[in-house]
Amino acid sequence: MKNIVLIGMPGCGKTTIGKLLSDQLNIKYCGIDEYIEKSTGKTIPEIFKNGEERFRRIEREAVKEISKEENTVIATGGGVIKYIENIDNLRKSGIIVYINRPLENIIEDIDIDNRPLIKDKKEKLYTLYEERYLLYKEYCDYEVMNTGSLQEVTQKIIGIIKNDN
Image (cartoon, rainbow, N blue to C red; front, top):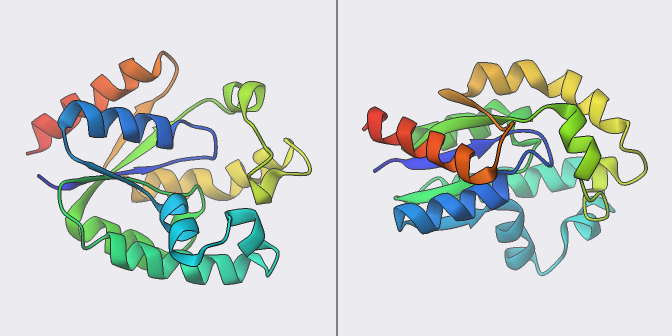
């Protein structure tokens, strides 16, 4: 089975849905941000203190390594789509699923404490959304709306994966 790569805005559910998919399909799970924290020994906010570009360089290396995995659910960071190199690497071994969650829903419940790009203002999400929305749409193989329960979204993705293989 190909890897299942989840892309989307911060707070769209990539991590939680990724873990649900992993459990239900009995395959590995890898969150890129978690992988980066473990491999560098630093939190994402700590890495961002040295600038977003430094983080993105570390992220590109992590994506390159993680893309070599098989039978894995990969939850990306929201900005992974900023570099086509990331998408190319992820697409080699995976199906890319865009989890599209309405921005209003994200703003209602997102915890911004550990999200460096939006830690000052939730309004920053609108700017990020405008910058990234078309890239998410362009780079995904499938788009799934997250407007119901996370379990419903998980089941939609499982249906897509079964039809794709």
